Amino acid sequence: MRKSRLFLVGVLLLIGVIWLNGCGKEEAAKNESISKLPVVDEVFEKIQERAVYPVKKDELIEGALRGMTDTIGDPYSTYLTGQEAESHRESLAGSRVGIGAEMTRTNGKYVIVAPIKGGPAEKAGLLPYDEIVRVNGERLANETLRDVVNMIRGDKGTEVKLTIFRPEADKHMEYTITRDHMPVQSVSHQLIKERDAKLGYIALSMFGEETAKEWQKATSDVIKKGAQAIIIDLRGNPGGYLKAVSEISSSLLEEDRTFVVMQDAQGNLTPVSTEKDEKLSFNERLKQIPVVVIQDVGSASASEVLSAAIKDLKRGEIIGTTSFGKGTVQETMELSNGGELKLSTSKWLTPKEKWIHGKGVTADIEVKQHTLFTEHLQMVTDTMKEGHFNDQVAYAQRMLKAFDHRPGRTDGYFDRETAEAVQAFRAEYEIKEGYDMDREFFTALKTAAEEYRAERKNDKQLRMAVDFLVNELEK
Image (cartoon, rainbow, N blue to C red; front, top):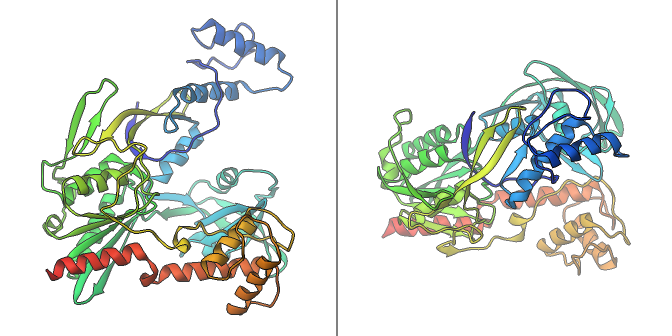
């Protein structure tokens, strides 16, 4: 049985309510024993024999497995099917096999957000806003986004045929794309120069299998270039593996320092300390130079372990807002049917033995971001007109307000005042005149927000981190 410890925000799955602990052989349901609990066998048999809605045996069993984890009342304990388990492992892996394109589902359409640079999709010619209509000749209808992603995925070297509709060309196009390995980068970095100071900026999007190695390369690069301090950006980081947190903590803290404390179901406490990793060689300057962590409400689990350790051990300052607040640890255990059980088996405590579950790690310096940084940017393909009332209109109203165009309301009702704000935005960004929210308008909204975010001066939290470190270095 493979077990791995995860510090990751999970997804609450829809689940059933039946308990059982075995899977029989493929045969008629009548008199088939699938558990040691008679009432479970009884319910299973009656559903198979008499339910007006037919349900496959495997689906009943998987519903029961989900039901057991639901009964725990813990959103982070769940049953994963074999396919879900594989997707979960891929999310933390160093690479994934696919066509290399980010997708979304909007208004019932499956839309390409952006092909990954250098990936198979980009090389084949796919573009943002392309709508996927068919996969291998099968027309898409009411599938979930996950279903479509799974249809497109496959083994390295195999082909997938996509039929797409390109709105700009107003025509359908056929593409045959060869699947390939796509590296997953969890660490990005740059050197920031400010008032004669050099600061290493390192952003961690998750704590995956290769994160510690990527962290080693990033820190080595910025220190080699003269970085005098480090900014660690954990915003939006949902967590990941304990091992990755341990390796990164060990590079920043002295050896044998307790950076997290585990508490089992019986209440027993086990300190976990930093240690030297013989496979990774970190620059010793990392242990001495000033450190600042930037976090927000999207920083969870493993991110909170790192920020809490830095805060409790007075290794650096935390800037931003209070983090998510997930203080449990999950073990992932393989099951005989190919699925996995992800079960909360421990609480984790800060070095000062505080449990941050439901509370989060508070920032030393509270800094709230501009709305354009916190708003989830959407791709909308439909056209909205006066009188429409929906979530897409509400999104546009919030964005217009953030750009100081005064829609008057943000409840999703498209009235005359909103139309005038749309017209003013279109004029400012030199879009064809009009009062409707069409694809061109929504594209301009998204582009304008991305350009705003790209300007470092607009990032209040990063700005504060830079100013704080520069002032520290000048003392």
